[in-house]
Amino acid sequence: MKYHELTIYTTEEAVEMISNFLHEQGAGGVSIEESGSLERRRDLSFGQWYELPLNDIPEGFVVMKGYFNEDEDMDAHVKAVRPRIEELRTYEIDPGPADISVVTVDENDWATAWKQYFKPIRVSERLTIKPTWEDYEATPEELVIEIDPGMAFGTGTHPTTSLCLRALESSIREGDEVIDVGTGSGILAIGAVKLGAARVLAVDLDPVAVSSAIENARLNGLEDRIQALQSDLLGVLKISSGEASSWSSESNPIEAKVRAELAARAVSEPLIVGVPCDLIVANILAEIILLFLDDVYAALKPGGTYIASGIYENKEETVAAALLASGFEIVDRVREDKWIAFVAAKPKGEG
Ligand SMILES: C[S@@+](CC[C@H](N)C(=O)[O-])C[C@H]1O[C@@H](n2cnc3c(N)ncnc32)[C@H](O)[C@@H]1O
Image (cartoon, rainbow, N blue to C red; front, side, top):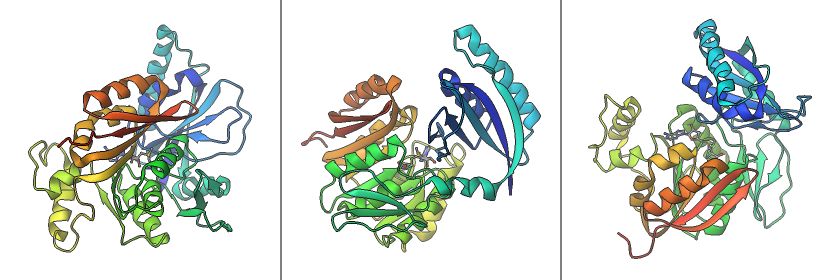
């Protein structure tokens, strides 16, 4: 299968806006190559992210790539995006040269090109992430997460992921039942079990991520303790409890599909995590975190922990206020680069 790759040469200050434009045009993923950086930053809503070699992009500039399906009308997308980028200048955001080009790439090249830059990495005191294709000799106290993220987000080297893994390391108690929302490659679910969780329900809206999480759970020998399902946020809990009042199959086709699947497998595959559970972790965008705080609160036991990541510094106070308004206590804020993860607790004695 082939993809169109739309490339825009622009500035760091315009990145967030242009990324939104590309998503609004229907890009399935966006990658960002920065000056002197080893990283492509994460896609802002879909979750694609991978590493690149050092490059010669000047300081302050970036190369963004939006990925579109083969059958998309790329001329129309370029026509739609170009004036919106130019309009940024009227808001005193400088998009730089904003050159746009389109090439068609083979999915296989795209899906595997990053692999050579993904190496074993120690992300916390005890956890090391190891690509499945690399040799690595772990020390006895190290917990190794084997990962082949494929097309799903979650190599563990992105700050939003490593913040979650560190927060999990300090929060998980032996035998905890955990839900991982937006599991991507399943990296946090696997990390949670390695750190002592009894079982993890791992959900993602993207079926590619669900398959990747299932495969990675298997690679780590944890298929009995990690259940990966497609779900829009915590929608799967409502389906399994038979409570479907807040949405209908017409308005949410994914949930309709999941409901049908669960109904078909209801006897053979009930949810492996009891709700309310001990800990929920979500590494998704701040905007999405804000959408389902009440559902997270309801799905946690009193005294339970919520680790919320994927929050860029400009959204820190909005998320903090929303957590408090939903009834959570903020236990900790951890940061890396300009990303923040919150560790919050549902107060003991709350129903
Ligand atoms: C930033 S990635 C996190 C992946 C992994 N948990 C990690 O920490 O590296 C965010 C993930 O959330 C998923 N996602 C986005 N919106 C979602 C939604 N409404 N419901 C469930 N998952 C969603 C994306 O498909 C993506 O896999």
